[in-house]
Image 1 (cartoon, helix red, strand yellow):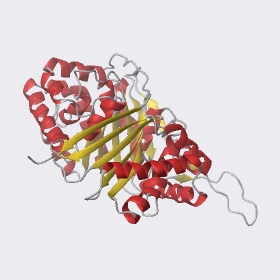
Image 2 (image 1 turned 90 degrees about the horizontal axis):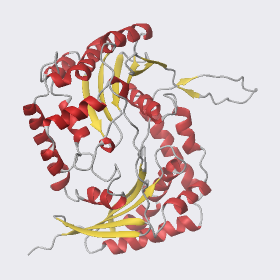
Image 3 (image 1 turned 45 degrees about the horizontal axis):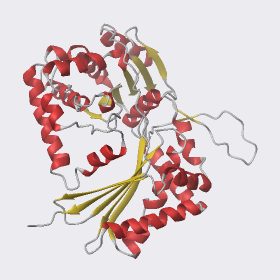
Image 4 (image 1 turned 60 degrees about the vertical axis):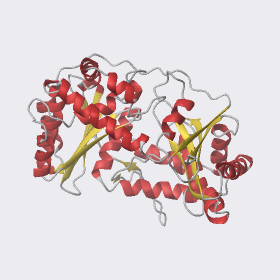
Length: 445
């Protein structure tokens, strides 16, 4: 469940009547501008603690790849830490750590992000480092360096998928769920054969196309002086040349017309069941309601599936449900691991009974309110870190709602009724259009 949260500015816009307490609106003030090379910049001042986050989103993920050439976005997540023209290999981390900062990055279907959390007096250092790898990464990206990180990514794939218990399930589910030419059909980490086949020129071409200022957004949040920060951004990023315009993704329609079933075997000791449905993209109608559906089903020890499968019948060792939201489509998934002596078929029978109950009648208001309370609590807890705020500002900007979309995002949940939750289960979780995958223990010979 995605939660994009941050410290808020409370502004009282109306005068409350005597004896009443007005609820002030949730606002996160920001300044937004764009450089001549197309880089979008969002600044947010928060002087509560003397720290700053520099957060860069490149609007490229595995969805921008092509069949036969997968894994490039994730490969660049590694290459971007390997040095650039003026920052030798290993110096990036050394400089940040010497200043008391830290950094990281991540890749998903829709974007790649990089961020630095630094004391406020080290802001210019973080901007220098980010601008140098945006402008000059190719100066040091030799075939040998690409090969080295290609091997690192292959090993990561082995650890996370091939050699991980139940690790191949998610890759198989996405192949069953999305059409072969859909950008969500392949894993973010890519396929081994594609990583092996990628040439140095393929990788260079990918960088030149997507890692350009006009395909990126930069958020700086924390203890900053706005005019000085704007001047620093202009100093370090203005001279980076603009790239060609990146065409938007035009995915084919994804439709399930029936039930797709598959069984895998793995070196595990317990069967595991995966039920997966296509669901609405992030922020689309039904997206928030399915988050609440997941909470009603598995959000705590009083949730419906946990009570029946784990506590009462003790058929399952664990059960979880979640709405995994993406920019061009999403998937809703229920995962349950059987206890020894029980089968995936037994788990599926109970899950289908509980889903049918939810389709027949709405959950009671107490169940829904508990789920909404969990969302709100998580929302406000995440607001305490300026790094979360920065990532949220970037995510909201990219999604098109404007960087300050916090109040609207929270309202997607607080406005839901029990009938909205029931309607989402009926609309998006039909029993006759889904993917059913079972992972069974290998039979020892």
